[in-house]
Length: 281
Image 1 (cartoon, one colour):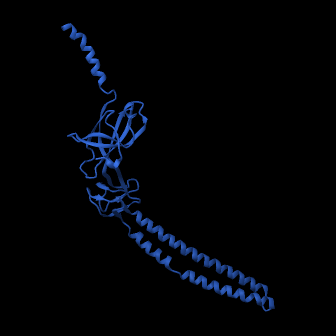
Image 2 (spheres, one colour):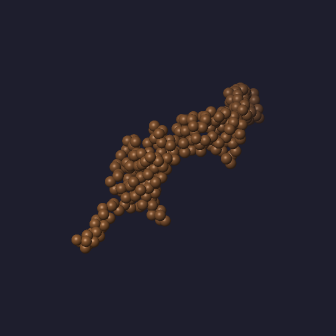
Image 3 (tube, helix red, strand yellow):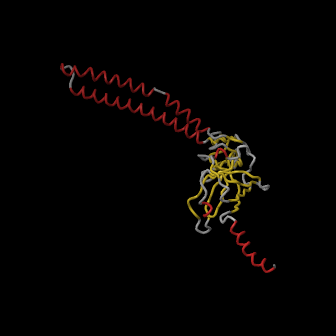
């Protein structure tokens, strides 16, 4: 009886080993914001107003801060006055009408012998000069209008806007501090309604993965069960480790999860289903 048990035991061991999926894998990572922006000032300058606080929710396009704009505002006022003024154009057009009238008056007089060719030639030259002065006045007015738009654009560049919906996690400058061109950062804004988890999986496992597949995850120190959705499967296998980068999205619209939360994925052939990202929870 004892001899028979020894004979059967190797067979049982072989059966148990072959029952385990050959490409199951447990991999761990951390949840990160789906978007992170180091919001920078477009131009150097002194911070005069800060309109947000750390931890505050912001919308895309919302004003975060303003740089000193007083000199530009004064320049804008002068440019607007110059653009609105028609005095140069009106004066040039008045002179042009006089020169045109004189030219038209001399032409028939020359035919009747009451004017000489030199007078008509001079009248034509004066008319052309007046026409050029009128055109130059119009161009200067157009350039003044362009200058107004340029200054407005420069003023807007001295207002710092949030590029995305998210949360201000850090403000790098205080009111009165100078933002330099070589370090233009003002604040960090992160988008947390979805979290991205980056895994590195064995290449043979990735063959079964597709974008928008739902995958089971264990989130946090208590390993709560959540589902994520495959966002990206890299087409490149790392030659050193034999792994492939896979990005998974976690729905966080309720804001229950914190960036940096540990996430574990038990990857097996039966753990995959194809879904739309809007159905993840």
